[in-house]
Image (cartoon, rainbow, N blue to C red; front, side):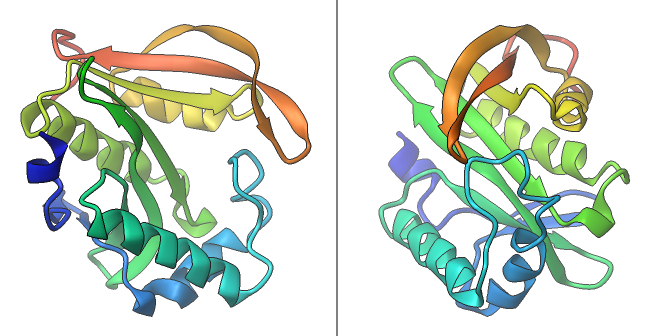
Length: 188
């Protein structure tokens, strides 16, 4: 089923954003935010030290596109055409009609409602185009800003999983959130 849905990784739009495939030309924009230690503080990947780190991320993403797998969309700010982050489905389980969303955003764009706008559109795509029943998201315990994004998208807090993720040489407790197709709290 996802093979048909992700064939070509469809472009998605919101009022202020374009969610599109990442391209090799995006390396500079990706490096700009991925090299910011504050941006990469609570994600599973390491801060990009060189532009080559960003190019490697792009290479892996392009491979996922070639296999028609769910993955990351580049978040483009319509106002200036700049790629300012990524968001998408890190994994999916179509047997159980569920997927997990993840995201990252350049620091100058924090606090403007951009990530809830992008995440809401991706959740909508998951329910309407992929036929998902459940979309999940989690964040490292100290990253409450990410939790607020999840709440704004209509997700419900489900609990804390202790030391669930090994990243950056330590185990992290995470907060788990999810939204179901039947939830009325999301405006699609």
